[in-house]
Image (cartoon, rainbow, N blue to C red; front, side, top):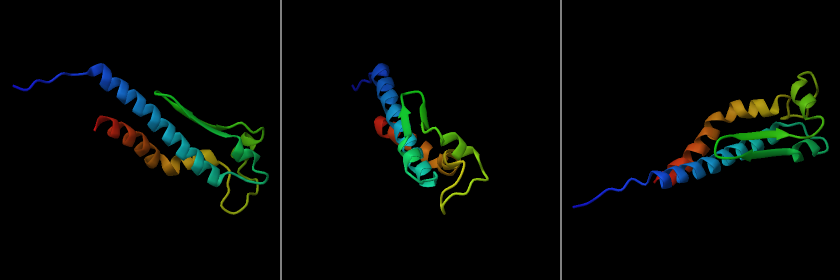
Length: 111
């Protein structure tokens, strides 16, 4: 006769670790896509970008003193392919890919 042992603690640990990896992958993807849109003159803005995650949340942002003004001023001129709202637009344009990055990690952990 076969038996089944439910290893809830191990499963939850695997899911939590996979979620953290997935959130980091999604945050990294968002940062990369945001960097493709961010204004670039000296490169300081892009170099100030960070993506961090744990098993519950992820954050992407820029620490440059002019990150917020560059993001918010829609009337400022930017080079071709660069634009205001670079982080926000990258999030909206890539939401499905970001969600899929998280789901892929969890799916892999459970297979």
